[in-house]
Image 1 (tube, rainbow, N blue to C red):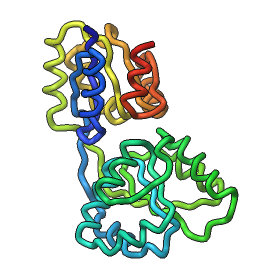
Image 2: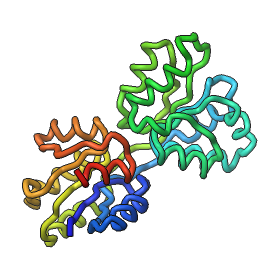
Image 3: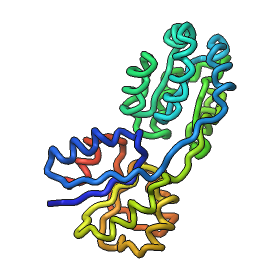
Amino acid sequence: MTKIILFKSESDGGDKFVEELEKNNFVVQSIPSIDFEFKNLDILSEKLRKSNDYEGIIFTSPRSIFATQQLLKSNPDNLKSWSDKRNFTVGESTYNLAKKLISLETAGKEAGNAQNLSTIIISCYNKNKLTKPFLFPCGNLKQDILEKNLNENSILLDCIEVYDTIPHPNLENAILKLKEEDDINFIVYFSPSGIKYSMPFIKHHNLPLSKCKLIAIGPSTKRCMRDYNLECYAMCEKPSPESLLNVLKK
């Protein structure tokens, strides 16, 4: 049977990936490669109270939704004012989380990455000049693609870093155990951070990557593979089990 290793965060919808892959007769192991620490929640809380200052809110990661949920739980009256705005998420995972955790309807779930999301947002306004920015809670390693594309079209973001991305504390032990595994066919990376944090351990413990086919979730992860001189077997356009299955079945 085909064996697959997923390098991802614990909050990147791992269960649904494992479930869908196992349903299709793959052997799957999920390794948490990154963890997160929240910060600046007092600043985010203040901004959430001032919804009239914003066109809407944009989420591009589950962590930004978790941070927002923490604050809206203690101030539920703030939620109604955001529900009346035009809000966006980058993919199905963030769309589902926003709906489930903070009861917020959003557009953009079909995007899959920041480049596509910026196109969707720009098309919604047809070059109409906005007088207010979007609130954009994000992480310390966010890409500049979304902000750059929107700024070029006179759509402004109020960016606030609400979490730091850090290596998962059990990452090295998990990689060490992989040396005992036979016949790993595919390794799937969900983010550039997963590559950045795992590669020193992979090299130190001489894990033979040349025997595996590497799959990137999204263009930024693919670019990171190239930066590390890793051969990318394929890229998933969207961070969804269906997109990964399509790549694996080619």
